[in-house]
Length: 261
Image 1 (tube, helix red, strand yellow):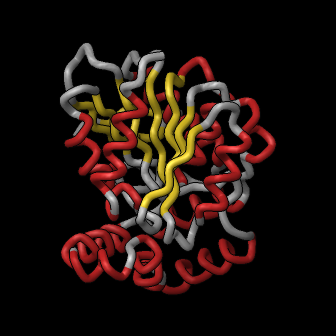
Image 2: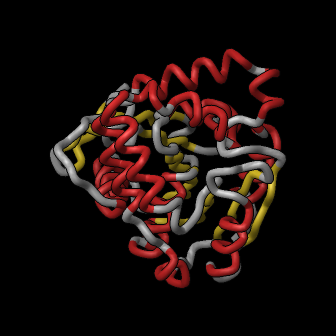
């Protein structure tokens, strides 16, 4: 897959689909990479051009020296769009990717056509929780947290039904560079999009998983109340709603993106 340079940081990306079609950017969660969006890439590919990327510190993108912030990670997206000559796009982000979407919606509104915020919160977790996770990874690597993460990401029923997906995801988590993961944890810990939600002007869809322990439905509902005109969808899913409830997720995403202005 190709790479683009964002402020000297190599960002791996994949751009696929009809060349003249509208572009949808898919932004993954903490500890994942662009493969997290495989189900949606297939669902969107006939009608949209799909841009996926590995956030800095993840997948095959660079792990630059830290610290970095939500703004840093979000500006990587703008630099990637500039490198590809993409002026205005739809943006769909999950968890950490949702924070990126909120930042872009408030600070780069002219670049965002429609915005989808999935399994996320305007302020994710507590300082204490993030600091404990950073300490665990610093001391024991990604294997110290990977099992607990997949238990939050997938419902018990999905883990029983699709153990190969869970195993593949756990292995991917454990391949994430520990320093990239912990620097991103710190960026998420310090991020608070609540004060800027009222500035988001793009038509917005908020998607929550009913059984999501990481960013429960109340968090998605709060975003939907704060963003003018936002719509809210709740799925029978845990944190990785795009995988656990892929068919319902895809249907909601396509319906929203294909609406007439």
